[in-house]
Length: 351
Ligand code: NAD
Image (cartoon, rainbow, N blue to C red):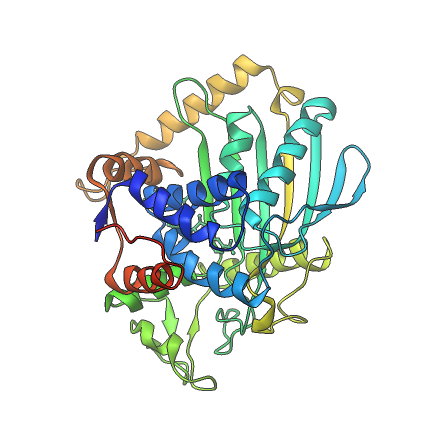
């Protein structure tokens, strides 16, 4: 299925609306999901609606939730999303932090109990577009953990993403480093499994701890499932633990060690640190320094002439331009699942 982004946004919005969301919530969630598809992250695109519908039907995703402000010192706040749509409440929390950082130079927000916040780069980009530097550490509590610690063959983490974002300069778009601490995001295993494609080497172990490219090992019966490896061996494994601690125990959001029941849906905690870089350096000098560094990195001769050196955020810009022009590919299994939900709610399925 290749589908135009506007049609897909409209269809995604109708599926969100089935849960009773307000028009604003429908717009934010549908836009976030389709933007993830446009940026090439189908793992966090409209395919997530299968889980969202499951969760609002089960009551583990609560549409139209208002965040509870647990504490607010002006520079540090803690919010509890009470299982509301992460796309809506994480955005509000980061917008709060941007405002506070503009006033005080730096702001920290701890977000607890958000239902899936989606593509974390969204929040880094919002802060970067407001001229802020930001760091976001996320933990995930949702069912059995699929990611093994370094040297392990049993899952102990979910995919605990990190995002660090640097403002645009006028010459360069925001630098957006945004990745799961697993070798691959779990959604990418789902997409490969749905499409019947193998995974890249070095991403999976089967139940016996043997390397495999078969995404099916993650969908075996419980007790026989394989694991996803952390990226970068002990370094990624260490960062996964830090995400878990910063966004879990330290922020006060559920952790994978204490909360894995599937009946709680997909819960993210997030620690966001937003810094106004104008408090650190002269603005013009900083922007010139960023441009200089980007040009320096990109001036490295490519090892393979067909694969140019890119800056974090660039692959997503390239994907977006291509998908805006040519449409978004949605695999058959995902489309079938979405169509089945749409039929249940008497929502017309685009063809
Ligand atoms: P990925 O492996 O594609 O890595 C993405 C990062 O690497 C981006 O910053 C990208 O610009 C950069 N990058 C990719 N190729 C590059 C290249 N050739 N040169 C330079 N930089 C390059 O992403 P991922 O780990 O699969 O994560 C995908 C998405 O999933 C992210 O947006 C993440 O936030 C999201 N995620 C969310 C959750 C959650 O629970 N909410 C959990 C895990 C992942």
